[in-house]
Length: 385
Image (cartoon, rainbow, N blue to C red):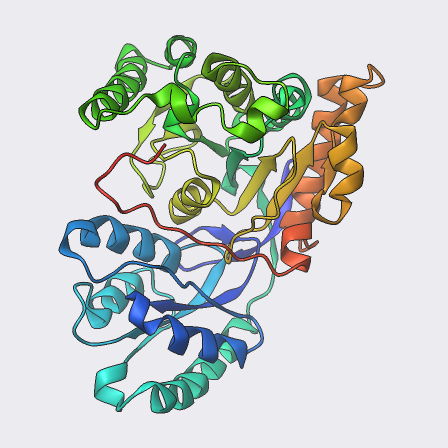
């Protein structure tokens, strides 16, 4: 299980999906982008709530470029309004450096949304025709970048679902691939352990500094980080402290050394395990890791969550028997046998890796089948708990 069938891209990466991305440069262009994508099979609109304010322009631009350059994207249409902070032509030019077909439209130049949609639909169909010529090729597991996430965590997340994900993480890193762990607020209280796992003293100090910076920011705002962590749902699921939640969270990383810390939406510089500085909210976190190049997301959930992503398949795993039954439409993999003592984490980890490779080869995850395409770019200068 050391290969999958991926779409080769001009920059040397391989995608597990073959999307035409319709990217609005600003919230004001969302409707146009959505209407264009709705008329073109294989197109997805990357709607977001940013793009106008100067304070968030740099980070939003980085995330949008990352999604335009994403391996799961075959071609790009950027749609702008015209007067926004993030200018669509500049965004399209940056994305085109990946050597994939890129077009751009500006609503104010085209004369409004209806005309933009009409012209954009023609362009997007042409881009989709180009995308359809792509063929999957056999590629090494070393080409895979896996994002790991947990949301709606409960007691079973830390003792079953997340350790099973950790087995997959170890397998991918050992094969020369890349794994991203995230959610800075959810390593608080366990950061010293993650730092001890670091590949270097510098990487370990980066982790400690990250949590220290978060705690100082929270204190400056007059907030108590423990007031929002664990969340009410976490507490109902049996988690009593932020430390318990954090200890469960880091299990997703497996046992590989942490190579370093990534800023939000930053692409890993080399293979291995990395920690990305993101908020704890699932959509912000998943979006950041996908913008950083993750082709697939494994998402553990104790109480169940339907969240997906427009570019990357999101595989859901739970260790909670009730959730596996009640939220069956949203769950791809059950870790309940670990809780019941009927299977080891290693056995289920191997089975989960098989599912990851099946999804990489084209099998749809539940979130994809149900049309979940949530996307949120973290851009606020305020701390998000």
